[in-house]
Image (cartoon, rainbow, N blue to C red):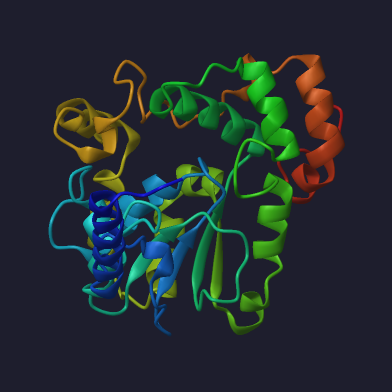
Length: 279
């Protein structure tokens, strides 16, 4: 192919522009950031309560009320933030991630949830944020079970590797169960505060819980869905903040149950979501 002179100039210009962007960290993804020794990462398999956790912790550490317009600037997401923006944050930074186990993270709060509810929640997230998504719930959950629907691997491998990571030896990981956080938020948030060395008062803990309550977050979504970038490219007829309740029973047929038992049955029992495989 013959490249004319004008096109050649444009290609060189575009390449130089990209180099300049990289040089000045302009819109370079946050996943390429330099990790500091005192960084804390909020890690989870997707749809396990990470956004809710960001609201709770954001309200613990910030003087301003957290909402969908500002929460990414308080606790940034490595997938939607830029390297240069995170670089400007003072230490200790708290950063959201869904990555599989990595030695790079010095300190981690890991939240996990019943994978049956995770799969249902993720199905509705896909319908909300992916215009070309056309899978049925049944087919999506089957792809969730084998780990083919996400870039983060299978749920059981993700959870198991983080739970049994070397971080536990030095008390550098706090394991949180979504359901326990929901059932007894005060004691769970107190653990978070202690883990982060925040010395939060009981009043501050209760305030962070109230300002991160599902009903309150629903109101924020309703008032901010037209202004927040978080909802800009989404189907606004599908709610992001849904019930927060366990609802997998409404959607699982016997085939899905059996598939879940085959892949995740032993871990469900280990995590006390079930006592046996007769569910």
